[in-house]
Image (cartoon, rainbow, N blue to C red; front, side, top):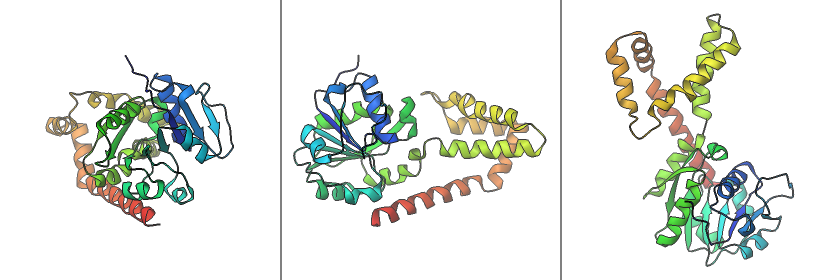
Length: 266
């Protein structure tokens, strides 16, 4: 049974897509009582499925009402955030902004960095998170529970892993969508109708991939078994590998990591 958090939660940027997704998942799972939730935005008060949560455009008001403050803004907007979070737990979902910089700007001694992705909207996000050594065991448990309401979560011991995951797991559906588009484009070039090709590619990525979604899934074993079978799939896989598939993916991840570093540098 899900335990409802006793702490009051404030989400800066809670009316944006990610802040909204986290708030909605936390409330719908019973993790957060909406009466103990405050969200801030820029005055665009859409119909959010978060009950009687308090809405404000004043981040100082949000901070005063909250034991835990979630920073759900773009990294380039962080410089405009002016809140006093002394004595509070601050959880950032921003890419590229170091935990120490967040602590210095907000006055919070307890800071957590995390990287949810768009699948939080359907409670399927994998969220890695990193905590400064000052974060208490109780607050670490709170962070884990909050992000488990959006899917699954795992603590990492090295902050650089968060920077890396921003360009990996933080991409959400983007990488599978890119592969789907490549599959669709090739199928269409071979004369298949695009609606059929799109349906086939989506099924491959959303349905067949469930074979390695569970705890017994082993992607390396699946690839090896298919190559060892020496059939059509093996020929396709081996050609992709020979054409630099792994190198292309690695280069993309390196580019994402470099972009994150540039964003952090301002």
